[in-house]
Image (tube, rainbow, N blue to C red; front, side):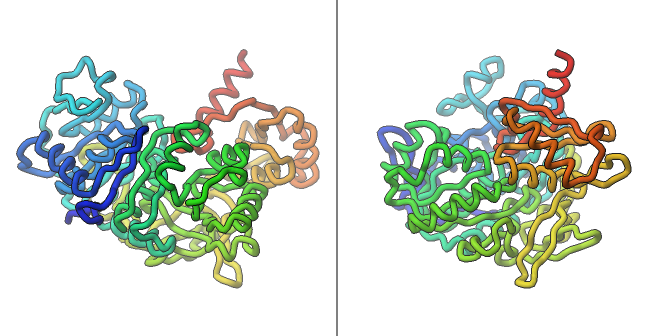
Length: 463
């Protein structure tokens, strides 16, 4: 079953890119997709493509072309390390690989814009007819486990997001997140679904070219993970002249109560809508959202299920989601691509939650983010939230040999952190270890990278 995102009229703008600003229409984008598929040659069976992508026109075209041809694509970061890429190529045996020409100099292929299309040895193992997309949840680590998403998953998620955000063809979102990340891709999918025009850029929100494109293209919305909003707070976005902006969306991890309240007030003063959202790649992107009118009274909540979905609480308070956007399942090799739907639309999120009297859901932690310190169960996420709110700085909490390792971004708060922990957890001081790092490692999607953090702490202690 194909899923076409090119919903706009042939002459309607689909992409706004570059400096000077260029417009690519839906008709031109569709023709470019057909041209890319022609480069792949005659389609005798369903193909798998690996796309080393960034937020640029060729990457987006290749992704849309794959959907248009009923093929399957794996979206991977353009800077994926060679060793990680080679490992994935060996496991999944794709039919083609598209990446930057400069990086692919030692591989024969067809040059296309600034990328090279590499044809790989044919693998006869079948791919399930409904499989449309493979996404990683591991950032740039190259983990072999991928999320298997169907055409129906992509369609359901795009339709649902467009409904609760009330999207239409007048929207002009600007890309702030990588397209290989489910949140970034959901912005693209939901807007192309309604015939809107994307301001497509790979520039960071801290750069002048980003804001030049924002103003010239008349951007109407901004999407961001917590790190994005930390940067926008420092930039004092409320002082910028942004007359076309009307919607802010946040997901990709919990935003501190302090920053959430800050942007709630900013949005209210500016006449913007501010949506706090919750999701997982396993649900194609979105699971829940908090309507802007509830933000003041439900500060810190993830909200209610997206249209077409349902939330409930399972064993031990685990949040369970049901919806047509729930993945088919995981894959770890080419053999797994022939498998159909293994979840039947039910996703056990791994998050702990509770539901209040108004039907609004609140996260309380992760099932697997539980540590035992001297026999006491400690929820690491709750400790992070507690310290973050009281100290006003970035905090990471890890379990470490029957102790809690607390890492702060501000060394001046170490004594205060110890005092908070001693007074609230009832844990002996020997079970508390507090240190500082000037900069926290982040994944490519802007989330705290706990494995890399552990390695840095180890290197710091050995140094």
